[in-house]
Image 1: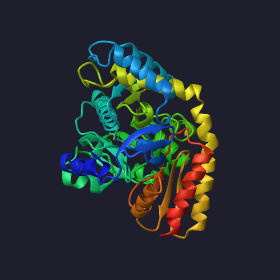
Image 2: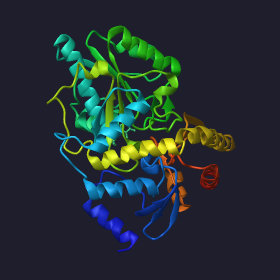
Image 3: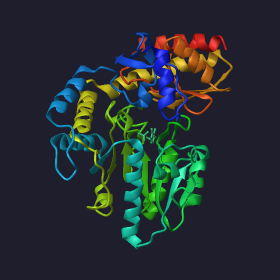
Image 4: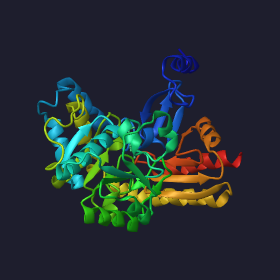
Length: 397
Ligand SMILES: *Cc1c(COP(=O)(O)O)cnc(C)c1O
């Protein structure tokens, strides 16, 4: 079948929950992807902040292949070595005390919310606790995660959500304070909002929320699913501010391409929340995905990924700032590290489609923002190539 035939069949067979770009991807190499007709694309999306190490990393692939021949799944009723190693390494880079592996980001958020509710329940026996989430946040598509997602468009048709969620404004400490009641058990937020528009939390805000939480023994849940794993030049974005969460979620780049996420917590929360029988997953933390996590964390260290991000990210910022200065239709550059956005005064769909035709893969975050979340191994030359193509696409608007 040719590309068009695959696309037509996909549109007949797959549920139409995505308006997909018209390419069928086949393989990858570094920061490049190839479609089934052999056309090459520079990829500044990385499967949405997933492929941190780039495509076709030999050591990563070899580790997974070896594990496939050994064992890919056990029930969580038994121990397995990759999960033990992955948890130890994840604890070391996060400074958190306990890990629960999930299959996705949304599931990590679900687990975090359950842990927070159970913690509060064990304290006062009430079953009407509230959670504060942020406007413009994104935490996933399952009911719990959707309930704390601050985008009414995603929630509306699926009401009712889980109850007792209050929304506050991101980077507005007063608005968080105003939502606190004697029933508040947790505040959940992304240190850098991803889907909501590449907005980093200000230091005062994050520190202020932490202080509010500490005063009242409210748990701070930080969602690091998109902004974590080195993307901002820190393993987890909160580390830059020194604002340690009580519960943290991670996924996306954690497995660099296999479905794995995790929620982590401090011992204080772990010892007084979820206990045997309270939470589970069939696949979560299986030997295959944990081999990936373990290898990813090793490769981050061996290849000095964070140092590299800190070195190239300012260059990406500079190139995006130059584009902004050149074109009136670009209103603002936002973001931090290799998690950047260009805000336009108009929908960006046409620019992204044109870029694809020119061999550059980009994605939006909301209708007017182009998001840049390339593999973390991206080079200055790759950034130059991206900026050139994008420049050409904006010029012909
Ligand atoms: C992608 C994302 C999620 C959801 O992760 P899935 O693996 O798609 O369920 C949750 N939170 C944030 C911040 C994300 O970027």
